[in-house]
Image 1 (cartoon, rainbow, N blue to C red):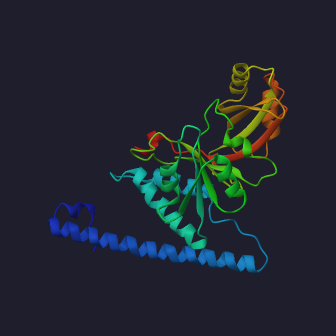
Image 2: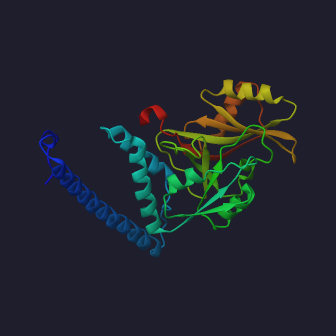
Image 3: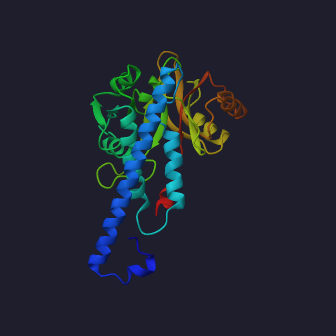
Length: 297
């Protein structure tokens, strides 16, 4: 029987261990119950599909972000918040797998950096991770349905043939999440960051950022363009720059605060105000803003 916090000091070692055993059994019972509810969700979706309706795919990063933020906000005590998030990550990944098993595509950047640890932490210990030699191969695996999600290394300024240029209006694949979201792995991969790509509907989490490719005439120097982009939109960040050989324009990967997936015109207006007339502005994804490190301590 569960003891009050005040009574714990009156228990001997055997009594404390018995208390832990009782709590463990209660936790497992709740996990079993939670799994039955997840299965009921899957059965309900099957009924909707059978009736000709549409349902959202099991992987919903915006909903996961809301869950993780709630966990952190209501947590107290000595148990680490990062470990708490990881427990839920495993439960969510296992539950999603019950609805539909899926494969995670992984690739390396030009420096050989991958996001294996981030992928495993975010998508659990059961889902298959398949490594591809190039970002292009991993991207095609997403387009062709051979992988449900892909984890790509964070872009670097000046890298040749960056993966984000593969995202086009003709492709359903979008950037849908940024990793790590709630705590970093310790040791190998500790400094790694990445983005999750998937062919799913973009959803608002309540605190989001949106990614655009902004194409500018090559006559404008890179430094001038970057300064005007950053000063033209508050809170913006430029994550990548490359030359589009087909148009000879310079493409910038621009990270803008807010859920602006339907507001490319707003971004264009802000850039125009700052003297930048973009040839093309293309939305390529959005993601829930990761939980700040200071909130996890």
